[in-house]
Amino acid sequence: MTDTTETIAFRSGTYRTATVEQTWERVGHLLDRFRITRVADITRLDEIGLPVHVAYRPVGATMAVSVGTGATAMQARVSAVMESIESWHAENLRPGTVVRSPAEALDLPYDVRWLHLAERSPLTPAVELDWVAGRGLVTGTGCLVPRATIELDFTIRRGWDRALFTPSSNGLATGNTFAEASLHALLEVVERDCIAPYCTAPLAERTYADPGTATNAMTRTVHDALLRAGCWVEVCDITNAVDVPCYAASIWSEDLPVTFGGFGCHLDPEIAVGRAMAEAAQSRLVMVSGARDDIDATAYQDVGGPPVPPPTVDRPVRPVRRDPPPVGDVTQVLRELASRVQRVTGVEPFSVDLTHDDIGIPVSKVFAPGLRMFDERALSTRPGVPRD
Image (cartoon, rainbow, N blue to C red; front, side, top):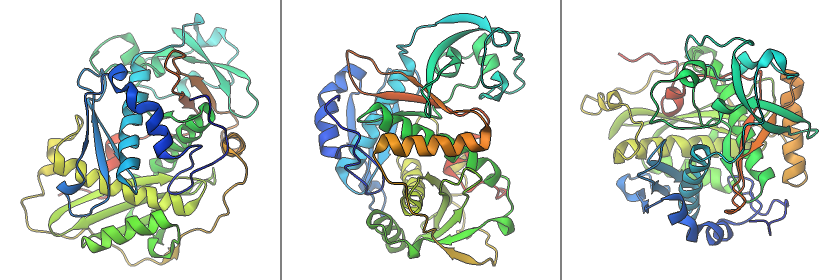
């Protein structure tokens, strides 16, 4: 994929340096290489009608099923496949260990305990770890990170690494170029930081936004589809001190009386709103299909009961933000985003290149020590609302 420039060629619902058709042309013939056995369209299992595809990788060490959505069937297909591909790269790490050492013996710009630790982790700066090399997203300065924070293998249930760190795909992304992959990975890390306080914020303390005030074509398409399907739609502005627009969306309907949630973070606030609503719709269809490995069976407990609308509060509803998105190519936008994060955390975000040179699909794992993590089980719900 080296023939792609860093110019933003696609801006509808996301920033990409190539069209989805061009991306599919580059990756479609490689499905066997990643053990992806099938890509299926599950859109018509739900009446919302937003395209959703699933990619099946039965021998994966993480998720066998990856899901993607978009404004068109091609966007959804590419999204599902690229998510599966990025997981394969985290299961089959290319970067080698550069040193085995305790953190206290290294000149790290961050505290190793700021990374995603396991519950009751015994990690201290004196624990010996295997380290791999990354580079800062602002200056390019080299930076080390524990290998165990990158490698994904859910078939391993116990072990020293699992006692220290929580394996997570947070900050893992692929793209047409490495800068594009790193941009989307960093947006995900910032999104998680915004979600953390939202998960515990009472309804009366949230900031509500009207998705109907957005003019972005993709965002309007998603909102209109939800309304046509009879969905109640709630959107909250959860942007924090990093000052990158981030939104949470919740949807509910009488025919499927379960509340589904989604989140979106993007430098363009209208794209962020659309991504949040699309993710909520995707979460609903994933539950309808029963396709993903990580579906909690308790999510189905309310389906057979009488439809009880979600609780709401009487709060002002604001228009969607009008923040002007930054100008420039993907590299410049990435540097601007990384600088915003660094101003808040005091640490330059950095990325580790997981790309396999013999395959050529750029994959990035991004870290932003100092930003918060949260319980990822809240991703597909409306967090902060207690269940009966």
